[in-house]
Length: 66
Image (tube, rainbow, N blue to C red; front, side, top):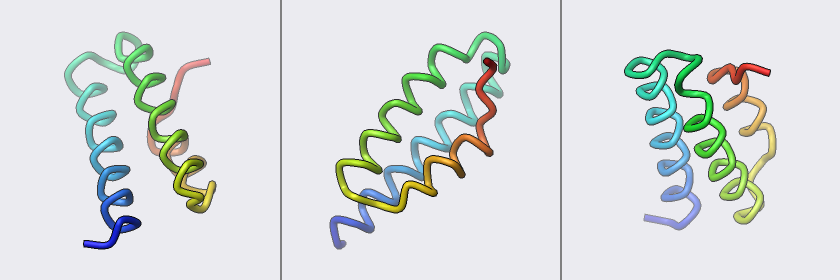
């Protein structure tokens, strides 16, 4: 598997984990975990020079409370 494909699958896994955190903990109680997951998601997107639109998509799918 090409590295880029592996990273994209990892990003999908992070998104799935964030969704599961919301299901198990609820949106309010999951906020700290969601921030940590997002930080890792952003780090991977930027390190591997992927389209930063992926970060916007993550934010749309996982609404962090402000």
